[in-house]
Length: 88
Image 1 (cartoon, one colour):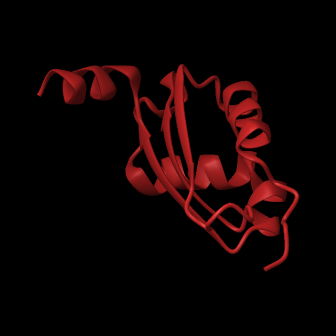
Image 2 (cartoon, rainbow, N blue to C red; image 1 turned 135 degrees about the vertical axis):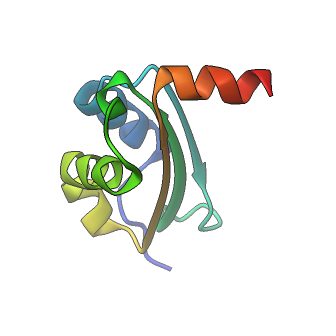
Image 3 (cartoon, helix red, strand yellow; image 1 turned 30 degrees about the vertical axis):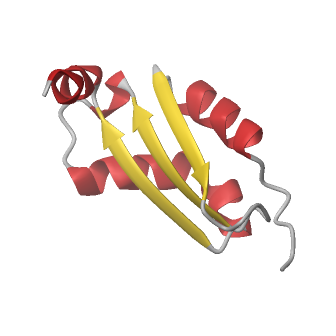
């Protein structure tokens, strides 16, 4: 398996900077080679946007990184949605 050059740390920094994320979790589901990531992003940038619009926003912001990996799965929430989920 080839190393994509994309790290959890790089993704975390890019997500926080480009999407004004207040909370980010990143799981490397590729077994450590950096080819597949599952991310959860909490950002006020998602307010008023449906799931498709949120995914498009993330895909545009991380276009370069996503192109280097085999799989990228995302879940996106506003801070209010995230807070409600944590209380449930």
